[in-house]
Amino acid sequence: MDAAEFDKFADEYLAVHARNIRVSGEAPEYFARYKIEAIARRWTAWGKAPPRAVLDFGSGIGASLPHLARTFPDAALTALDVSARSLAVAAARFPGLARQVLHDGAAALPLPDEGFDLAFASCVFHHIDPSAHEGLFAELRRVLRPGGVLAVFEHNPVNPVTRYIVASCPFDENAVLIPPWRMRRGLTQAGFRGVEVRFTGFFPSALAALRPFEGLLGWVPVGAQYYGAGHV
Image (cartoon, rainbow, N blue to C red; front, side, top):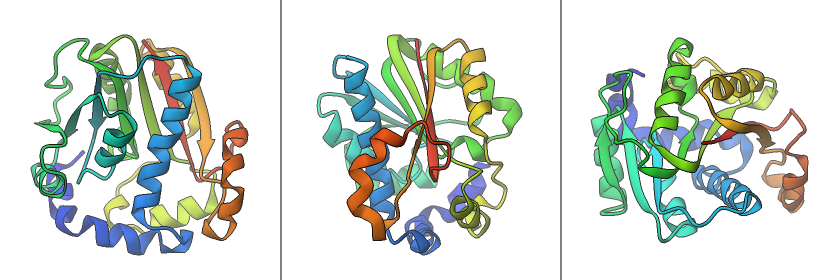
């Protein structure tokens, strides 16, 4: 990831993002919230105890932080990003909500071993050179405790609306979308167990009444987004 690229967009990120996804009929808040809700449902299904520490990898301006805090109220939150300006914006938006860590983009994360129960990444890896994915997955595995989970949300490249939104987004100019099969392979090769891929984002706002059924469609590979999850 290019820190300067994200520093440049940090102050206007929210407004640009809102314009870019207008076709969906939703605001950025909706997309930030539903990802955390989806992980919370799976967390319960996996029978996990509430996490004590959560890492928001590539946290940007902090869109996920209030939803993580509300969903996992007893967890200490850490926001990690390569963009110092994005972290500053996040701190101003949500004072004291998360410990902030600036990552210099090196292969190793500036975090101790086995410090987290959940590591979460929201549409981050398509900004990272594909050759670095497996190494970062391995690093994220290193910072998770035994029994911990990595959950990585990404855009689904087979969904035409997703492809349009990404192609027209200024800060996705250099994005390389990740096929779900590649996500599964990368997590598996990095040593995660029980790797699964689930699809999300099937219904636009006009069909919001059908969203309660999305949990039944996780296996259908046409949702606007998907997430890969693996266990330590």
